[in-house]
Structure formats: structure tokens, C-alpha cells
Length: 138
Image 1 (cartoon, helix red, strand yellow):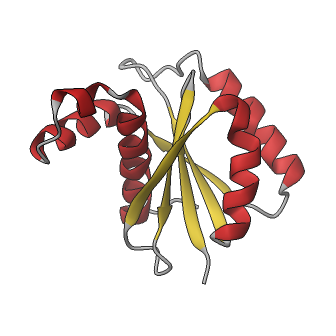
Image 2 (cartoon, one colour):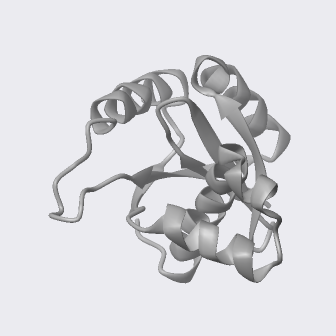
């Protein structure tokens, strides 16, 4: 039974999360630098038998796409070329960083843990994926 992988794409690093086999619960995986992203995605697609990729769609408060969207579109084209059978969905990721920070505070994370950007990226990817699992789009 395949899983769903989510990606919170950032300027420096990307957060990753994967669903359970029943596609009900999102679990944070890790963060990866952008230069290593394609190799890591290829590895994860095989390891977890990924059947769908969900990529966060960064938007400004006004609803306009953020400047990183061009890089995401380039990544999507590369993924579609390398993995033509992999469906890719997008989820609005506005406020996931704020929600991730709030979650870390609620869980009792130390100030040092909250300042580690990788932790926020991983939790943001988890939030993106859980939102998708709760409201699947095709």
C-alpha cells in the first residue's frame, strides 16, 4: 500500500513528511537542502512506495504566488519528466510556519529548538500533508 509524500519547499531547505500506509496520519520525516532534493525525493519515492506528492503552494496574504513559486514550477517539471506516473497535488501553505511555531510552543520545545529552522520546515510539511489527508484534492 503506497503512501503520500509532502514537501514544504523553501529557499534554503525543504521539509518532508510522509503519510502512514492508510493515508490518515502525517509524520514528519526530515529536512533536506535544495541541492540534494532531487536525489532525496527519488530515494523516498522508492523507499516508501510513494503514490502521490503534495507540494505546498506558497502564497502571500493577498493570494498572489510568492517568488519561490518559479523554483517550485521548475521542480515540478523535473519531477514530471523523471517520474511521469507520479501525481502531484498542491496545497495552500499560508500560515503553516506560524502554526508550526505555535505547535512547538505547545509541545514545550525550548527556545533553541524553536530557532532551528529545519524543525519548522519539517512540521510545516507535516501540516501541509495532514491538511491534504483531511481534504484530499485530485
